[in-house]
Length: 244
Length: 306
Ligand SMILES: Nc1ncnc2c1ncn2[C@@H]1O[C@H](COP(=O)(O)OP(=O)(O)OP(=O)(O)O)[C@@H](O)[C@H]1O
Ligand SMILES: [Mg+2]
Image 1 (tube, protein in one colour):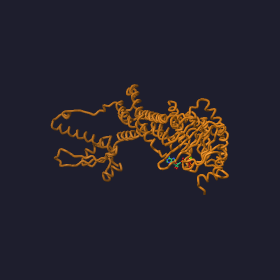
Image 2 (cartoon, protein in one colour):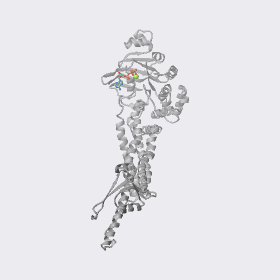
Image 3 (cartoon, chains in turn purple, red):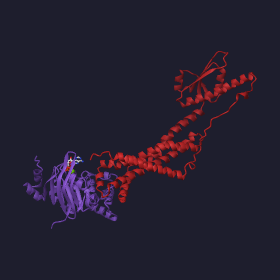
Image 4 (cartoon, rainbow over the protein chains, first blue to last red):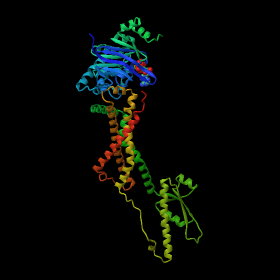
């Protein structure tokens, strides 16, 4: 059964000065799929994500979420997206709970639904005792959990996560990984990471980006086969052509 | 769209009011710090002047006229002291508040010349010089009357015109001056300081703390985000000067009695009618809108490195 396309990216290009950050990116994510974006530093993962969330405008290319084009109706698209940005923050003076509530309200979630969702998110993420604490007083791991919670509270058809586990300790990484494993059946998740084992475990399909181009795309097995290697890490190193 | 503005506005107000810095700028400065800064000097100067008036001033008299010396001794406003050092040393060390030199002239001259040496920077010295002038003029008058009497001219011939100076401004006018000029200045400053922290926090601050991009992924128009933030700035730029005006009016009701030196409380009710208050509020609102816009224009350009 071929599932419906939730995110379609075609021919995406973006240039910053004399850096061609994106040089024709094409991929699609289908409903219920966890799609991984892998690539070395500066490959263009974050730039792709910022274009999808209309934080920046691409120079060229098409982005569609559930058939709605970002270029022609950005607000409608944004309604369908919950996002954890790379190196993003939340309002320091607001509590974990208030931050999530604010984002939910901004996305048009209303009434008691917000509280119900926050309750369940705090439960799953183990944020219970921290939910009434100001964001700036939280540990890095708990901050990241709140950032994730903020994206989940919107309950979006498309969840976009830019390196959500970077800089976290192993137990916190596992909490987030387990959560993603659990929720990926109901949602479409676009997910960028550097951690190969994580990608191997979680991703249904993935794309390897380098220098603003997609060098390989497919399931882990398909990519390994294409590169002629045993595991994803070797395939990655071979494909981006940077053997140590 | 309106809902988006409302949400952003509420968020900005809420986060700002949780910041101690905002509260200090919004309440402590307008209500306490500035009024005290304005009132204190008036009180210090006023107090010093009154004290100098009440106490006898120390005067060193250098003269060959024992009668004049007697005249000085007779005045309870003056206290004669001896000049031990140079004039400037005596004045600087406050051993004497002023020094009077009376030159002796040839005995056939009808005029005696006197010099009052004082330090214009010292309140006590200025007051002492005034007092000496008064004593000297009374003494001169006494002599002139005697001379005229010798010529058979009655004393009343001396008086052709009598005049005196009087403060024609009531307390309310003084208050009006105070409110209009000094407070006016502080109100503009209050407005600027009141909104500065909020405007910077909600623009450059969001970039710096990396919250802006997430805010931009909210499905509301960017103009709504801008406007919500702007309105928060206007609110602070509006409230702060009102608090400043209140604080300063309170301060004025202390200062003005000192200025017109007549004690008693000041009646504000006649001065400001509800209509005028409405106009003042409207003007402050327009000013707040302008100031917040100005600050926002500058602040959004800061840190735009991404
Ligand atoms: N605002 C910007 N101005 C100028 N150049 C930029 C900007 N944003 C990104 N770039 C450049 O575009 C390229 C792609 O950057 P991007 O952040 O998308 O990489 P990435 O794949 O997310 O890397 P990382 O794994 O380090 O997060 C880099 O060369 C980067 O220096
Ligand atoms: Mg990145």
